[in-house]
Amino acid sequence: MKKVGKLEGATLDLWVARAEGRCLHEKQRASMGEGGTEYFCEVCDEPIYGSITRRDWKPSTNWLQGGPIIERERLEIMLRMTAGEWQGEWRAINIWSDRENRYAQAYGDTPLIAAMRCFVASKFGAEVDD
Image (cartoon, rainbow, N blue to C red):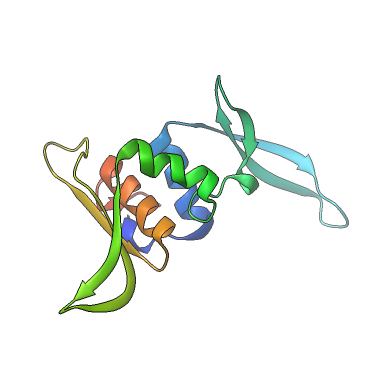
């Protein structure tokens, strides 16, 4: 098990795709140069969006992908403050969580990271399988 609050980069983006209910397909293609085969994951947005490769799916760093999730899920994003001082992190809260009248919250170095962690936590809880 891995704590959602520690997810980052491609792993966080993968869990956002899972929380979105996107289909994840393993595909195989020849790699450039020596080294044989490279594997990548395709994230499908059916039927409206076509498909996007996992390399291009980065809602934790791309506002065009993460922003609509924040808006749709009504996530609140704010600076993490203690005694009126910024703690160097952002905080995201989802009071509209699917999880039995509980709210989800998460922290991150950027607003998008905090929001995507919060979104994943609202769907799966504080920990996810590796």
